[in-house]
Image 1 (cartoon, helix red, strand yellow):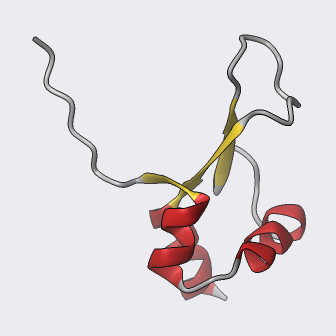
Image 2 (cartoon, one colour; image 1 turned 90 degrees about the vertical axis):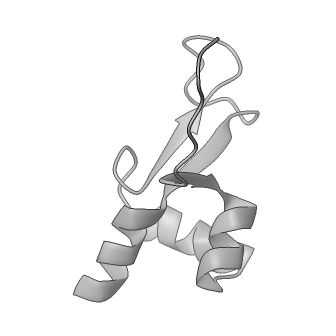
Length: 72
């Protein structure tokens, strides 16, 4: 049986808000204007090849976002 290790590098929005204190509105603003897709966040779709689906789950790279804040 495979061992699954979750290191919290990639988190969903609720966990990002909990860990950083950002509101959902702030996360949306950063995602739209400051963060780079594929670096700070990524979309994981439910169906293969449907990258712009509104049903995609957004995952956020917590270490990269922390680095972004430190460098600002």
